[in-house]
Length: 143
Image (cartoon, rainbow, N blue to C red; front, side, top):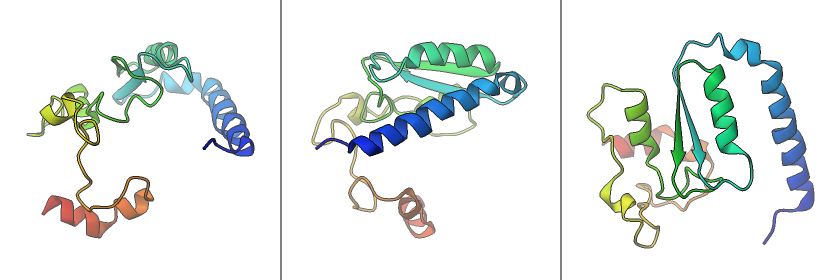
């Protein structure tokens, strides 16, 4: 199935075009931001010029780190090409005992979900983040 044309048109016009215009109008403000940023882009993004945009943003955001995901397309953070939690811990040097490298199962890119693990709550992918991150489910994951 394909996305309905009206939905695609809305996303391209409202999200992409107006979003880019809004950021472009605020470039002078971006250079004033003094917090760290992690910019992630896929090596083979055919949807958007992500690497060029990552480079442009990194020049505006003085405390930014760029990570290009090898072999990934536009959805570079989907699947097992990158472990965002480990990448963020490493990029931001978080004082955490958490992993700084991708899990072996994910790095192997094997199995039903190509290295991803089943969700701890047993739900299928695609639920509302509000449901996924409810207090009840969060407490289950940290127990």
